[in-house]
Image (cartoon, rainbow, N blue to C red):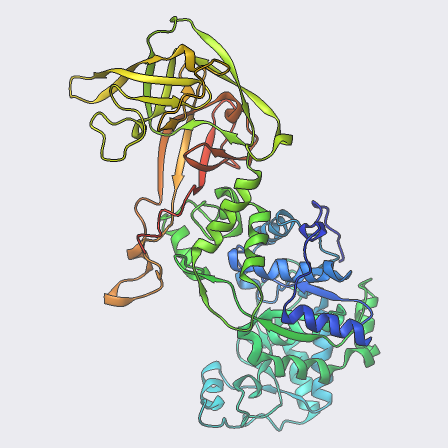
Length: 585
């Protein structure tokens, strides 16, 4: 049944320049010519897995175009293969669409139309456009021919209408075993398009369905169900990826032969259930998929990663699923920005992952508040301050946005700094803290390292430094020039934090390559996740789950969606400040 979603306002409501691409041009021309009074699209995922980054492009296109032109977009779950589908995926799909910022007009299921699809099969039989075939799947492949040789007609192709109707109805009644018979379209076994060589429209499958239970022992094939579902819903522009281009003639054949708009005996089955019937002849338009290097997008391979324990589930922040990258700290606006930058074309290509990561950096740079966090802590003691010294400093939440306001940051005698910000024997060009040299503590003043404290093994455990009182904020020497500035966290007030340092899951740009006998699992990056204990200022610890920050000079981090609490903070690194892989590729 129809259901409206309640979710945040769509991103397309924001004021933005008019988008120009070949699909939008087709839509503009169809509206201008009067071919359609209104636009209706749909996003039709199969609930057999979690949506991934590639689906973000389709979601943004389907929902975005509908909104731009004042139309509607349905969310339709293509639940025609119950053996591989699960309610868990249904929930996740709806969650992902809402998270991206889009609202669907109606929530539909292909199973809503099982009655009308079955009647459409009977209509095709009566018209002489379909027949029941007894060939086994292996025999059908043999009869199908090749790209260079025509196929052969099934020996059952010339059954009478009466015999075909009888057999199809007995299939519906559950009389026959799985895969023993199929309903096939009667088109052209010599067609150069393999999809038109009498394709299957229905198969026998005694599998319980999540919505219809055991009511149906037969299920429609994708091309048949998808095209007629579009027609039932009044979809004007059926947008899909390029692999369906060769399926378009079959899509059109199904729509034309069934002709729902002039088949009241079929549509009565819809209206009797309260389903709106808004028949239109949809136009299928194909666009390029979204493919990135450094990733594996195959559901089969992703499932293997999950089941083998190489990742921590479908929402592992290293996974390319929308659930995973959301937990990693990717934002809906970053994904929409990425889709806009990639654009819409008819040419498949492998895009560099830096486009995706760059969109996130740009989005977070513009919107993420700043906080201070130390990942690999080294203690600094300001020896010229009283042991109980405490004060509060005021910091801007965002250097480029005054409206973001300010926050209070505690400052005390003992601080944490990044271990890499100190070098006892500095390399050439080192501009941070070293013995006898000055460095600026962000917003607090200039310090000089006087003494290095080591443990019995020679490891550095503490630095004794002097804070120049004339360099404090508001003092005459506050603007004294020094070569470096480092961040810090008060040791007394800093909150111990679990910090998960995520990186790319694979070590090579093409993990699908099987050169030298290797498979994608051989390219897994052993350093794709490191967990450390660091310290963050109190204002960071108080974050809500999924709140993002730039940890100054360190990177962009997000409070974990599931594990973070102010009492026990957990932050995931979303992306580094700069592309650290550029020189590795």
